[in-house]
Length: 98
Image (tube, rainbow, N blue to C red; front, side):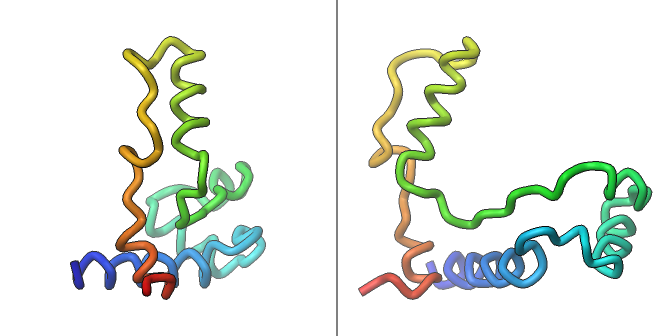
C-alpha cells in the first residue's frame, strides 16, 4: 500500500506541476514532450492539450458506462460506483485519509 500511495503522490505532483491548464504554451515543455514521445513538435502543437485529472470524480464511472452503453460497447447492467472505484490510495496520497 505504501508503494501505491507513493506512486499516486508522484503522479499527482507531475500532473499538477507539468500538465496544469494549457501546458502546450510552454515551448520548453513541448520540446521535451516531443522528444519523449518521439513525435514532431508541430504535430504535438496541432492538437489541443489533454485534460489531465488525477481524481476520479463522483459519477464519472456512471457517465462512462452510459456512454459505452449508448455506443453499443457495453454488455450487462451498469455497475455501481462503489464496485468500480476504490479511493483508498487516492485519499491517503491527497491527504484526505483520516
